[in-house]
Image 1 (cartoon, rainbow, N blue to C red):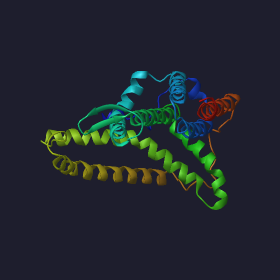
Image 2 (image 1 turned 180 degrees about the vertical axis):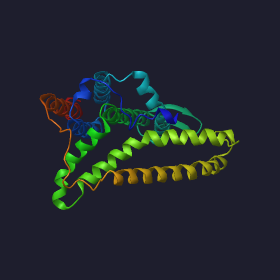
Image 3 (image 1 turned 45 degrees about the vertical axis):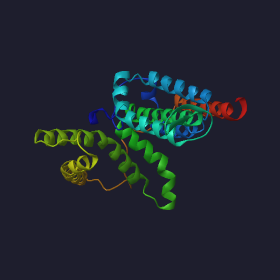
Image 4 (image 1 turned 90 degrees about the vertical axis):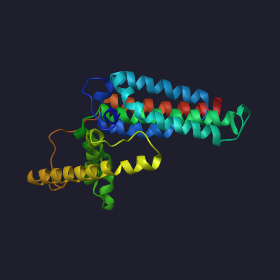
Length: 268
């Protein structure tokens, strides 16, 4: 399951999303995340779902790959849905059995939150799936460049964020490897009371932290050996170029946001 985490991975391709400037993708996903939280009715959420499907089609990333990436978070989505079903007590009663009562507003809010969660994960994942790590670093650094005026290290912040995203799949693979090694030695992570399961995680967490710190140390030594001294005075082999398709992407996201706002406040 851990190997199926898609956040931080890159899929080689030549789709429309692959060709976009990383800055336009970062700005677009920021706008989309804000807009998705404005969807508060069935029509708006339907538009959000259709737009997300369109982005997946434009990315040309295999659907099976995306499904495997979303599969690990389905349990969290299901838990969120159940929590809203039995905690929100507004509207008409849909189902009642003993002390369990499901209200109309609880079902609606649970579905809306689940849709938001899945679409946000998919859209943010498409950014890393269609953007090379080095391009993502350059895009973040350029967007953070105004922060240099207030003394914040834009280059270091961008590098830190891109490295963190890049090593998420690596850490997941390392976790899977350690879990299999512990299970071969008789450790059971899936059965027994919750206290026993949590206790069984200790043999997993300790070697995982040691491995993560070792990787961080190796990366720091490799960067130092190659003469890395931060972003001051550094030149770039590849320069970012904002094109007409990037402007169109931003306009489409703004139009999508305007549609959601209109559906929420005007049409419905």
